[in-house]
Image (cartoon, rainbow, N blue to C red; front, side):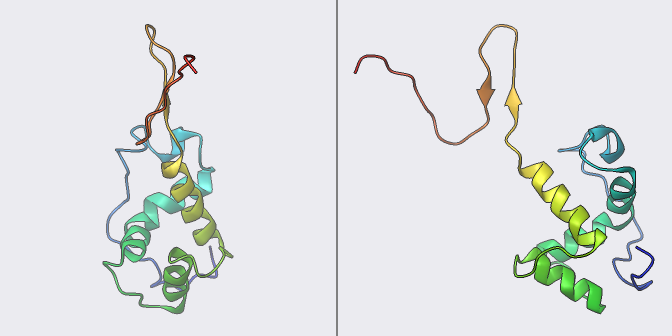
Amino acid sequence: MSQIQAKSFDSPKKFFDDVNFARGFHRSGDFTRDQAQMLENMGVALKALHDGTRTPVTDEEQRFVEFAQQTLAPTNAVERTWATYINAIARKQIYFTASSPATAESDSETSDNDDS
């Protein structure tokens, strides 16, 4: 991370994703300590660049935008961390309850029909 320019991914606020990581990035088990710290410090800028609400200022930010558009593979720690974050929030969530079988969160409904 030391080779990144000082202006790259600059953000005045810390990034928290309370919807997907209610207990924080450090406690989620999905990220290393360095990745969790990087997400907290740069996450607001990374999300804005990913969503297109912020224009890239440096070459690193421009490369990140190209990576976010899936035209380039992740090559540095920031891009690999963001890829880990995107994969973590895209995972299918499985919920278990005491009174029913496991259900997966999905848009399509499947049924087990033994009448055929």
